Figure 1 (cartoon, protein in one colour):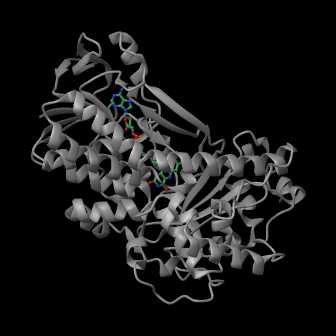
Figure 2 (tube, rainbow, N blue to C red):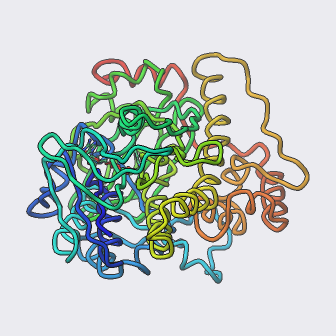
Length: 478
Ligand SMILES: Cc1cc2nc3c(=O)[nH]c(=O)nc-3n(C[C@H](O)[C@H](O)[C@H](O)COP(=O)(O)OP(=O)(O)OC[C@H]3O[C@@H](n4cnc5c(N)ncnc54)[C@H](O)[C@@H]3O)c2cc1C
């Protein structure tokens, strides 16, 4: 099959490599440049793109992505490790508060990867560039689709600013700001439907390198993302002795606007002693990167049981975006593209069957995670809005006899080994759906027991509203 991929970030490149290896002829059309930088540090320095600003923000690779990558693209996986990406065992994520830290069967599957996002894309660009059957065309902006009219229309290619290109299949990997619905309008097709659930957060983050001789409170593979009373705060391990730190407040919380200033950002991080201790062993290597406009979205091309178009599928953020602090994007890409490769193998000649099969795979493997995120974010946002904006206190989420909530699981995970693994199973997106974990009798008993014992235990030390405001004032409260 001749396949045109719109967008050459993680989604487009992973799809190109996997589809190229499955015997397809793939052309990636990316509006920005696609040549890999000279090395990973040069890649990090030029990571920011206005079309995909998240490339400069903290990333982690969850267990699902790691597993699929190591199974389906072992040479690319190896190249990531060679580039400095670090495998982070489940043991490396265990906090000191966990009483039983012994290994259990299945722990190895929950291994994560610690890396800056730029390093992943650097490896993917290099792998795609040498992949037989894959052509990378940078500086090529797609402006519309070409289609044979019908109900639904059948896509047969794309229009770029310079040319009209023909294909058997088009993949939209153009990210969260995809113009797909406008392109469908131009064809006279029905629009896709997009479910939207509020995420409501903004990212202020910075990258660091371990200071020579610097003493850190834990291994550089640590990832600790904690929802505090007034904001979410996070630390992510990185490749090549780097680490990533971030403040993630409500997007409407204007107090954080000065945090784009590095001094203010540092002062705000220092209000939380756990993170201040990390800062002492690190030196910054970037400015503060800021990103808002985050949403949970899930697009479907089968609407009311009928495809809106044939010969086109969506992957990556054009298909689904979720709260970035959970780090699900790359895992969804690996899952979705792996499914797509198998579906194309089975239904190459029947675009209708193909489209329905893709939609079923999305319902099975993507939608449960989107739904889980929507519920979790509604709880988190209600709580933050209550403390920050004075909105009414949220009603506790229904936690029936036969079910716990994600918030309960997260709270119990640092002190109970079963809850800890349940939490990392949900976070790793591996093996079981979130709902199956929340309804697992063993997990329920462990979480309930842990929460009863924790009753009254102080949460992580954090600033009062006055302390935070002082740290966020221009000059960082100095
Ligand atoms: C703050 C933040 C933190 C995140 N953290 C994590 C994390 O820890 N772990 C994780 O797995 N995921 C994370 N994600 C999600 C992850 O970044 C995305 O899922 C991923 O980048 C999606 O890749 P993509 O290829 O679909 O889209 P994008 O990366 O957005 O790339 C789209 C590409 O398409 C190109 N393009 C757009 N329009 C056109 C056009 N018309 N013609 C040609 N090219 C076009 C753009 O230039 C761009 O290169 C995070 C996201 C955010 C916002």
